[in-house]
Length: 307
Image 1 (cartoon, rainbow, N blue to C red):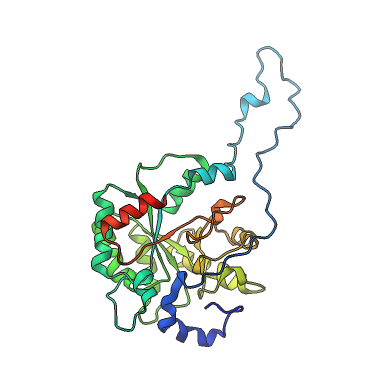
Image 2: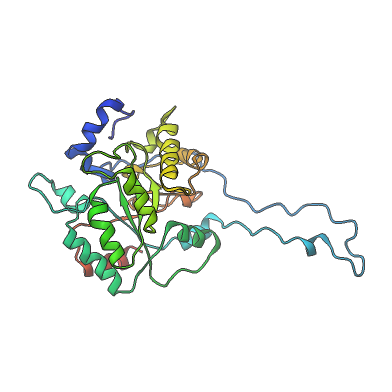
């Protein structure tokens, strides 16, 4: 999954179903490159010619009959508002003897520990929100609950349906599922019917590429295969827009942003080891990988320390 160019599509699935697939989003640690800074959003121009009737007593001016468009949030304003913790899990199952230290620590959370983490959030009165709510807050300053948190799951693991979804629903929580589409229908992974079920239960369905290759190494047809086609499939399955994206391994560079915009994504989430991009913060929002062994109180402490 960390190769410079995508591997042969016919051999990919076998690798995904093996132990190496457990490395998930946290395996690659190399830092992204940052090309020349993109220009920041600008407010609409106000230099239009005045109305010929402006200033006549008793007659409205053009500004009185047309409301000015809202001023776009600046990158600095978005960054200042980007304080909501975004938590990330992968598999929800008990450990096996073959699971390595990294998998046990970051990628495989035993269901009893996962439930303890959710219970701690609920007891401490955290409120789960969707990426749509977060985006509105970031771009307009709309208010959020005092303890807002976003729960996310990566990679289309079947245990997220069998273990995660019932636990979320039992606690009245919502979550976002960043789905890799190549694995649908294979043993141990989600089905297309599962994707529809997530949406029907009020969860957010979001994209995580076709086969989990690093976005910062795409070229040529990779953009269509990894960004456009998964979004189109997910939208067909759930019957609504899919506008949020997560980078495999959390890796990105600024050259990726125009492709994400062109593909129709409004946000993109990385992992917390890299700073938010100062020019395009919506495409470099940060997440926290939940340490599998955290107790509920340890999770709450981590939220306080990392916000």
